[in-house]
Length: 328
Image 1 (tube, rainbow, N blue to C red):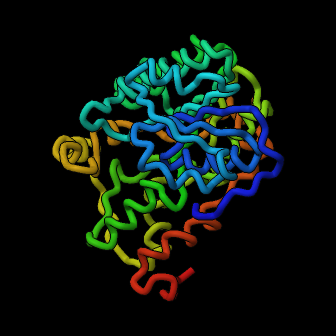
Image 2 (image 1 turned 45 degrees about the vertical axis):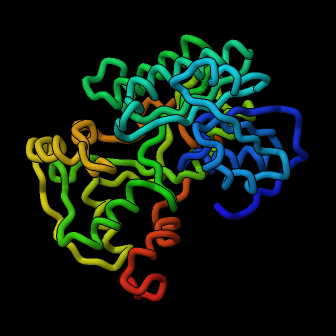
């Protein structure tokens, strides 16, 4: 992401406020919008730590401002004058005052309310599996965030990606790193859960289509890549890409849940009970979304395959880096 964005069209007076713009997905969204010529405001808790975003646009095109989704007044100020508001804010595990309820539900409501008050459009990024009636904290609060977005802005566009992968991801990078230190990788629930990993730049392109007005208003899109793989197959693919041989060890859901009670309290939360619970359900695009065109294809985006992207960043986990000969 060190490449400077060259705008595809002159910078306009249209302002897009991107909450969560300094995160993994956020930097790709900011870059995509900058190339489209939008002025971009990125509210972050620590603007002094988000300077890496500025070179993604032309001089003055990207503005950093201080805001915290737990403080609605700061959110309202950050959305002032915006023609569209994008909510990318999310966490994978609670930490300190950053709880699921505070970020996914309360924060989403504050952002949606600010968008409505400014007459701005709203693009809300959620996740496949979001459900306000779920007993899983992550899925429940994601669902509550979607409901809050729709309640405030009826025309809000909701994007639900499957597992997002890319150079800075916390999925393939985490398991590749674990494989360097451990003789075995765990297959929770036998590794049968199905995923449809989606490239981060493709999700950013979907956000861009929404901001451009090329997505259906009030629609919920489900975003997945061209391949559906089981968790076991994804672990095998990771090991093949880094040129390592490790034992793939079945870990029953009950035992995984017990271990997560301790692991979720450690720095970095290697495994949480919420994550174990979510692995009981497939994470793929629904048949209804495919039939109704609420997918990447419906937005005119041809998703990138795992094999075309993973080698570009997992090479750093190989024994001799890019010089390691990998069996195909």
